Length: 114
Length: 115
Image (cartoon, rainbow over all chains, first blue to last red):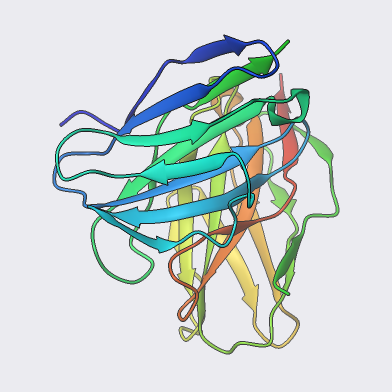
């Protein structure tokens, strides 16, 4: 049973470009979470999605960031017009439905904005 | 606001010794779950142990155990018989039962196990 897959593992963008980060949850998991880890900090919650539905986006910046989890295919975290402050590691996690079920994390995507 | 505080940025321990990592948290809610995650140099986040706040008995998972003091809002992690593979960043985190499954993390403790 493959774990949570994220790609790319490393992504370099210039300021003003778009970044698309992909996350394929574990088989059978219908819940996906995105977290951001800035250098020397803990992970910060961004968004919680189910298939075709955003459950909680309270941690998402109001502008330039969006997330989706379509009926088919991976979850996508999209960052438009990236700035240097977006440089971070972005982690995706997935879980079974239910309260506080274990969230299994992917290996992360390290975004570097030049 | 919900917060998690890990006051030890770095710790070291000799192989086979025991080490305790501290964690305190702040929430006005009564129902929640607490976790310790490990992040080795590979950066993969791995769940170490989990505790339900309504359970008084401290959780144990092989060499890992917790000391959960609900009144003090303290949730420390004890690692017994430390191994080199335990070298990692350790994060304390919690989920509120009414909080939509989002994990709130502390800033981490870097643990180094030495020969």
